[in-house]
Length: 403
Image 1 (cartoon, rainbow, N blue to C red):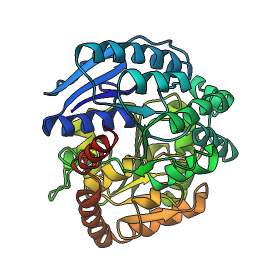
Image 2 (tube, rainbow, N blue to C red):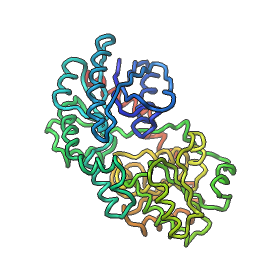
Image 3 (cartoon, one colour):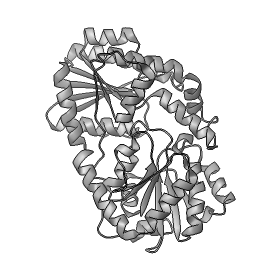
Image 4 (tube, helix red, strand yellow):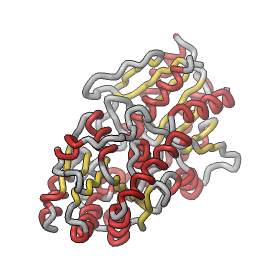
């Protein structure tokens, strides 16, 4: 089959969507399928080369939210040109970062091929996650242009998501929670065809270790007796890092041999560090704006615990990367996270409850033997349920069904 992937993110734009499209494309190409990815131009760095995967870049209007329309329009034009020279069998959209209206869906289905739309999350869910972050007094909810655009315009762009539900041959949600989110908010047609396929993670990069990497731990001031906590993800209000630092201050009171490392880009670094200083724990908190993949993978498998306090996710890949690395996870008891994490591989805390988060972290760090057991079970769960080999199998069956 020739599958055209339309995704606003693709490496070197390594977001959650970019990562999943890259790995799914690689798995499909390894099975002999031809993949063409149509993505946005202007990314910094080299585009990775994959055998059997071609990349087409198109222009886009660099405005928050509105880029989804301009990119979508130009991607459709490029798609039709591609189809005229190399017939496309299936078009795979990655929503919500591409916004087509009803006419564009009809045009694609009539003049190109059937459409499979992956639902990575909803704009209304993103908006509500930001509102929850604001209620929890997370820093700078209204200061980031992208977050502000979501807060003010999510209702408008949700209309294009509604068009995707009607205009696609099949929708594929990345979690049960995401599917329910669309059912509750968007009132899809009665014959709506929607499957759930959880995204996997790179189980070759994220692997457990038998021998502790002293060097990577010492880089962050953690010796063999230090509790090393890790949080990974974009420094944005809805990720919950302000609440995490509040919770860590309580953890530090109980377990002063603890360090917190946050890895992520974003505008909140200085605000978060000021908060840590105000709480008297600045010496125990470190924020890395960027880190190469090999170091990040080493940090994952050498941390004692990964904490993921996000207020909204379509699925959330960080917990799976931690589990694949053999490291237990503490995360929220909300949305899709309990579909991946439970008490056998980590623990869940009440979303937005700082005391609950702190108590869960302390409980996990108090028994390192149990931590190792949970880490092993987490790796086994990822290998069993959350790999791109499984994803490729699911999507091939869906592609064949819509042809």
